[in-house]
Length: 120
Image (spheres, rainbow, N blue to C red):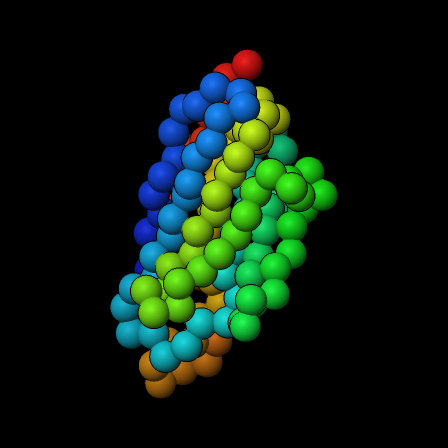
């Protein structure tokens, strides 16, 4: 059984910072891409940032220069450092990982989501 567990969400004032973490656990053979998506009320889920080995990153235009994605491969963990937060960053943030469990093929896994609320 493989699972992703997120932490670090919360309430912050505009201009503030938060750091999200997502740890993958279980019978993991290898991990390819990891990343973060978000979904605001009434909107579709959208890409925030991804990171693929060795350390290639991709960001949504709306977060470039403010958010930084990183990963610790030894811990199977991905992070999202969010600075200069804006009210429009308010959403549920979902962790994503492309994982190959032992004895099977790669598939996509999602975390349960963590709420980020930015007040004006």
